[in-house]
Length: 524
Image (cartoon, rainbow, N blue to C red):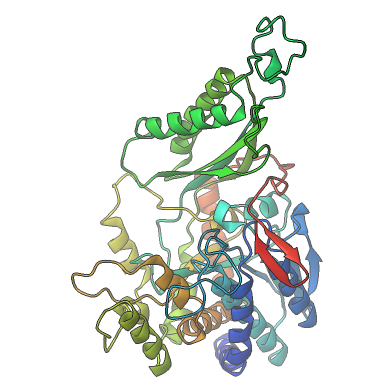
């Protein structure tokens, strides 16, 4: 049998597996979506993947690279053959609790500020899992040799795990990587990235510590019987340092970089330490900054400003300053050979299609918002393909000519270890009503959890991943082309890792979490 015929038969087998297992895949997705665990605290989600993969015959390392909610799974068929890798993500976003319903409502028993899946990473993980298991089934049925690797990647929203897995060697000796994300920004809908990959992402926590508030003015109140009396002068404390850092950095944001090029700066205050309004000054306060830039040089400019602000804020409030890197990611490397193989498979599968049940859900949401129900309520682009080249052309119309990268995602770290393709399949999105503006944010979150609307994404992406893996497993020339391109791009533009090999993931910082009591979970 020719390579072409073998690939065609194997891909048909894989697509049939996805069709036959869609009820199970849909249930799996609903489970992960309901868990909705935040970054670095996805214990139940990770454990579910570990147990499922072991049941399916994979050898699984829990807590890979020192990250408790990460894993690394591997399965080999026969001897020899290339190694394919994809991955799951499963972190949710605090403050976005939304039930899988047609009205704005929180999941039962949970605060509306609890985490919820927004992108949704729940569909990302189950889609690639579908592709992985469908490929495994086809490899067994058609005696295709090779190895499948699958990593669990926590804390994607802060680029938490992939840089660590990369530094620890988990992507070494991999021949090709397939990276998937449900679509959410046009024109990158039902396509693969071509030239413009995601850019740099830095994230750093600044901790202000006031260990000796009484040494602020040693000569104050010399007649006080105790140095910590209520009338003693004390250091302003950690909260003042944090607020000085926050306000100065906000005021200076326009001065950090030119106001073009698609860069952004976000901040989050981590809650720990003293929170009782006692008469003593706060001893510890933390703020996290995350910034996205088209290139490393711009990211370093922002870093210099933030480091300087932290130093002076700490000195003003009599605090020491400690810093902790969360992530420091390089811009991505493109691979046209990989993009071509994947898009050919996406084209063979076709874009998602929303049936009568999905349309009914969408129409009910529109009516609940006081809108007229549309005959075709979903964005047209959700059910259309666009070639990587056409998507690239449309994207470039909105970018500065010098800008090589746009937005950020931590798949970029993988692109420095092996030929990688980044592709998108549409998540369900509703067509705007004329003159009514955008839909509220809860709508897309809900559509990402309702089986009738999110299952088409999982089906399309799963079949596309499987088809791409099978082509690369069966046809050595495709991998050779991708590897030659990868090697040339690395030689033309070396880009070493930005963090040391022994970098420790910041899992012990006070990230948002649940309190658990048996099976009950309370947002804390």
